[in-house]
Image (spheres, rainbow, N blue to C red):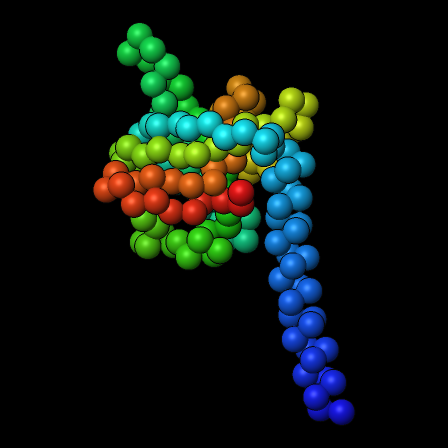
Length: 148
């Protein structure tokens, strides 16, 4: 009897982990074109950490003629990344490279942006909201940032 209970418990844990990963992956593929990646490089203008929601990096990316465009890069929740305000491996002003998926046309991905953050809303509305999968830090280290 105990053995069957333990097996059911382990099966339940495995199933919960599988369903959770599938739900996150489903979210990413629902809103973003996961068939191809692009690379953005820019200077971090803001870090928006949310423990149970998406983490966002605002990047100033060179747009030519000495101008920059502000991009919003969405990633996993801060709690999943193990980031807090003091332990985040990125800082304002750091120049980083991010592997990203662009939003699918008509996906309405801007709806995931916190409405009270005008800079995120502006980037999302301009079509510059992407999902980041991997960061390359100034020292060359690579970190997972979001689902692939």
